Image 1 (cartoon, rainbow, N blue to C red):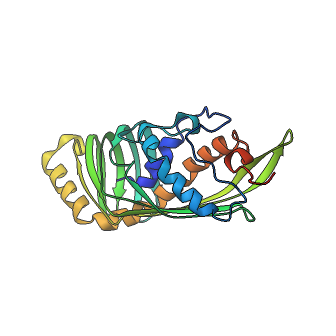
Image 2: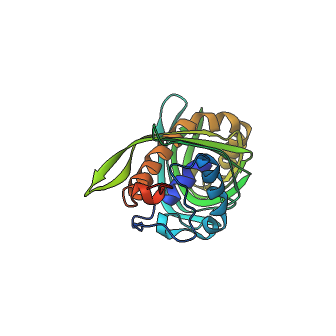
Image 3: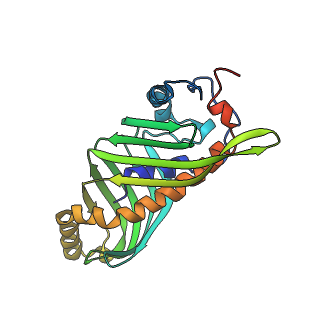
Amino acid sequence: MLSILVLFVVCISEINCISQDLTDYFPRCSIDDSNLNNCLLNAFNTVRPYVKKGVEEIGILPFEPLVLPTFNLSQENLAANYTFTAWNFTIRGLDNYSVKEINYNPETLIFSTKMEFDALPLYSKYEISGRVLHIPLEGKGFVSATLLGPIYATIRIEGDLVEVDGVKYYNTTTIKVTESIKDLEVTAEGLFEGDKELGRVTNHLLNLFSVEIMQAITPALEQLAEERFMRFMKSFTGSVPYYKIFPKLNN
């Protein structure tokens, strides 16, 4: 029951060592190019084959499949109150993304993008305790699910430029993530210490109220995505000089 964008930013935040330069195949978009946004859109499409295999130099793990050793998610409000831990989390199809829109304003230093994904199958070992809506969830075992497409995600990044030893770097100050996953199909084994009847009823309820469940847990997923993506941005733009990411046409 995890969103695609959380997975996207979790995976790129797992590598801490990032090169101080970009690889040769990584597209360069000039900061003073009048068609900067078109260049960025083409760049996203150009790196798609490399994203599938991973781009270690900029902190992106292989996307097909994407395997995460472990992560935690928790929430505490009227709609949802739970803690969830996943191990060997595997998801397929992340490399099959579509970038719908990219905008970067060099004057305001604000970047935004809209992305779309198809349905995504996933599976993992898990442990959960708590409830979502009025459905109690206790147990550990194996969970398989499919996030039903189309899946949409938007990211808005704000920042400023800082100078270190005469070199300028982009300093990310704010990240806002918005996600839209309408529905999912899920089967969780090992609920309530393997009680077959309770497990059957709980899985039925999870699928019956899947739309409402996604709405309830989306705020927590967005917050986790923002925290993870901030970690990646600080590492990436804090290591690669701004004018290597966006070289000038006219020096």
